[in-house]
Image 1: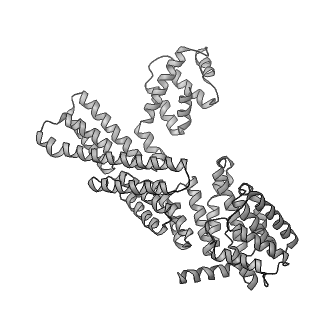
Image 2: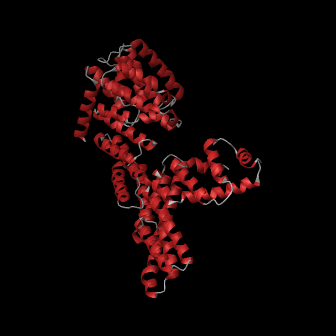
Length: 506
């Protein structure tokens, strides 16, 4: 019964209507128990098999119910194969290759029916259409199926030698490359799952396998195998932190997807733009990061997690570019996630939503509305659970806001709490010199104009040894904030001047 319930739960209202019509069309006489079961499933989805069986047959363990359930399952699967269902299904609309693969298989199945009826000419027409579609959408396995059937009905030796056999061999070579590339990709993913750290073993594996695939593709190119090949090259470049190469490969991947109908889907095309945006942001190319994020947002469905990720990239870019109105507009576009608790049960979504509140706090800081910025930190409970990551940066952000609001006693208490937290969780990286600066700042009566040697040393480490990461919780760049306080300038003005100077120097 579980299989019936799971399939039924996946059906849209339109598909349920077609299923009911289908069950009615194939019913001859007596009560239509299959239709009755569907109607009961609509009303009582929580019932178990014994309850359905008792309701329909007066016996919780009826054998007749088991037989009817089996027939219903077959009819449900047949209904799923109706062209009208996957014409209307949004999942297939967003992934044309999946739709076409089903269309090819259906044509192949129809050709088999026609051959059994002696209608070979009609069957050949369908099989030729299968070959053409499989070629167009880079599906060599289906091309082989259709060509093998065409070989069975061919009567012309010249046709066999010059058309069918060469195409079969070509399709086989392509499919072998597809299997090889897919297997390499699968093995690499398993290696990654077992050992997340990108070590020399994985670099060596990728170097060997990309060289092998490049050789194989030079002999028999295949769009699908090349897709895996490009992705593996990307993993290698990212693993080596060669981000300039990564960016060019992402463009290669986008072009490859765009020009191959068998690969082109909105989600598959959106992901390279999303990754490209992340790299551009990491390199502090905020205008380019914004452009890539906006391309990703056009491709992802507005209510999916990938859309949320792309929106976060856009928010980073807008914050650093000073496009505050556009950033707020982007946040408003995420109202579905914010206002629909049922969609927020996954922790990645909860974290993303907290990031949005945190971004709002940072936007308020940039606009020097420090009170509102502090109030917004009350909405980021999930981020505070990340004890060695976002938790630290949020504490620092709160201390900065308290200092801006001249709540110095409270800031001192928060600095002491930060000391204990860092000691307990053995925090590393930029938070350590930031804490040291704040600790000595408090001892220096919060005087930015006359930093003591410890404060100067902490700033030197932040500036020269532990570079700022733009795609991180430290949206307010600490050393620039310190300089702005010392110069009595607005933070964001100095930030943009520093960014412009950095680009000119580069």
